Length: 249
Image 1 (cartoon, one colour):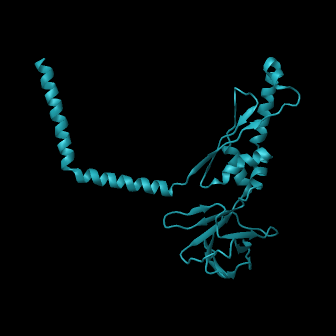
Image 2 (cartoon, rainbow, N blue to C red):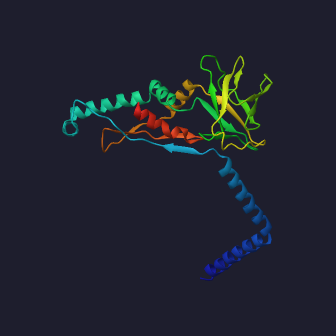
Image 3 (cartoon, helix red, strand yellow):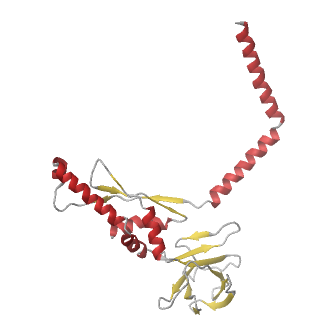
């Protein structure tokens, strides 16, 4: 009994000792909390969001009704094979390429920041119109400065060191780049010299392969002929329309 009392006293003493030790170093505790707070702000602000989207697809069987599939084991195996075939079609490159091609993702627009570049989805103040009859370098950044409501400046680095001022709607011609830039809403556009942008021309085939590799399709065991493809896309909500386009295909 006395031993338990002594142990309890020692435990209380240790807790008090730790408490006062922390209290004596309160400034370190406060500094740690402040640092953690600002780290959390930076992570939330500069980490690219990941959008998770999904769609539910009904696989129709023209030969068998739902009741027959439930009652007959052989027909259920046939229905399962039908679903597997549909999964293979949905995850195919051909279907992915068709879905990506129907979206406006051939060009990616970015706004430069102090720490990172922000990907703009349908919010860029300008639009790039490519000349499809001529070749254009893919994945190469083309820097754009919107100088005024009448003109802008193109700057291409990476050994080219090309800089040129043009008017909106004026054709830009180069061995590797051929395009025209127009303002999306010229009547509302307010030029800001500190705002700098760049765009890249994407490889649609590469985007299709990326989409097909990320697409994860699973069956709903309770309802048999239902496919639920969850999909994740980082950076911007462009990918949220991909399952919709796949469904429509």
